[in-house]
Amino acid sequence: MAAALRGLEGAAGRAYWRAIGAILADRGVAWPGRQHRGTTCPTNAALNYGYAILGTAVHQAILLAGLEPGAGFLHADRPGRSSLVLDAIEEFRQAAVDRPLVGLLVRGVRLEMDDSGTRLDDVARRTVADAVLDRLDGAEVYAGGRYPLRGIITRQAQQVATFLRGDRADYAPWVPRW
Image (cartoon, rainbow, N blue to C red):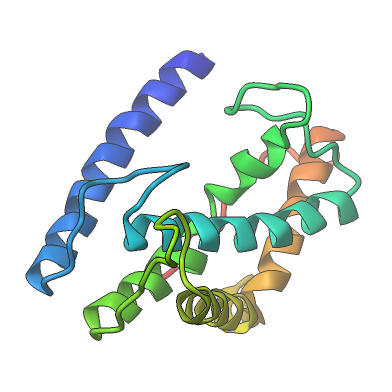
């Protein structure tokens, strides 16, 4: 079952990143496709950095909910790997990271790499951090009200915990509005 879900996730991811690439290409932003560790592409480096910031917020929410960060469902369990954090990030990455960073890029903000060519320069890191942190503190519709995205992440982690304990019948993901 997990392998089938990973296959579906992979196909959806490829389609998603093709669409992001088309949006960026319309604005003249170079996009070689999604790259992870070791990228020399500023856009990919910004996404990786933004996901690391989001991962910190998700990790904290998982700990507050009393969950084990390493016990994931989709990402393989490995020593030292926070698989549940990686799983939970999926629910929030588009709203917390992709949307604000694509917004910066289509508005013409340029992100540059440092002299090593392996990481964002200081200005770009600050720009990315500010965008992602502002988004985490921004209000979103949730459970009949408006709450900071950071608070929604915490409440969703609590829902996972109550589901896993058997105190609720199902888990309802948060779906952002675009």
